[in-house]
Length: 104
Image (tube, rainbow, N blue to C red; front, side, top):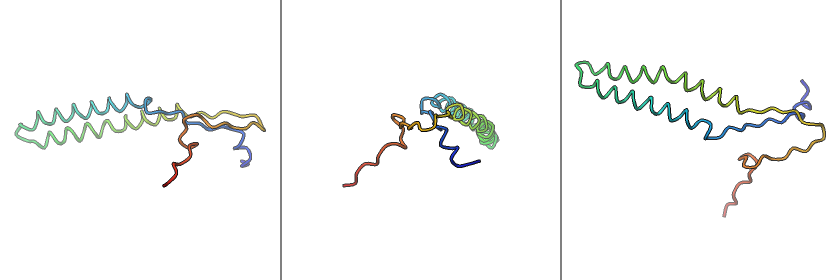
């Protein structure tokens, strides 16, 4: 692959916090429910079951959370072909295009 060919495509990530906000809320609810279940089981004879319950729920929910984040990220990556000689414009609001604040 020639490095000159990479300039013929525009790579843009349009992911925003609002795209993953729902996923974060659902995972926080899952953690809260698991902690509530653990607190309810703490009064039992073997409190190790309470800790095992929290660990098991977290362990089983993490792959689903990771899958949701990665698929959401991949769905928001755009690769579009550009015409040769076309000047690329910066995307409004793109952090990578902003200038750093002057240090006083």
